[in-house]
Image (cartoon, rainbow, N blue to C red; front, side, top):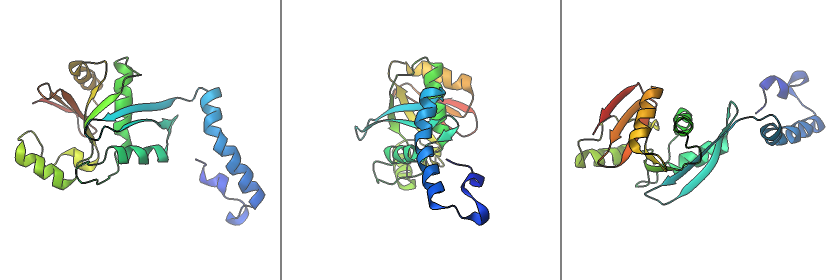
Length: 189
């Protein structure tokens, strides 16, 4: 992604040759930077337990979120019951990435129980369970229920609590942990 001032030339018009040269040089920049400047690539591997879909994607390179990768993750974490797609908070992906690092499980795959939930799905789940919040952060793309392969759910919970970066729900009977990017709080169900 280029700064605005680089794109603008004399009155806001770039000549075609300059634009093409700039476009070609920036297209290769992330690959070059990642290989030669050790720009950190934030990669997540996810497995949706309801759809059996899997994805491994570099959602962020250095300080830059990758739009195409975020779109893929938004679709991956859709409400599988309604097929509705919502924008997922990129900070949620940062939280998952940091959970992997802090549990020393960088190669682990997250198993996803629930990502985005439409209001209709959330209402249906509330009718069947007292454990579903009326104003769930799943409906705003700020929550996810998961496990991390190679890591106990108690360790995931303890690590998320120590990070203190959002809500952490512990569901040992259902074998998953809820994490979100809302205010810090904890609960056990």
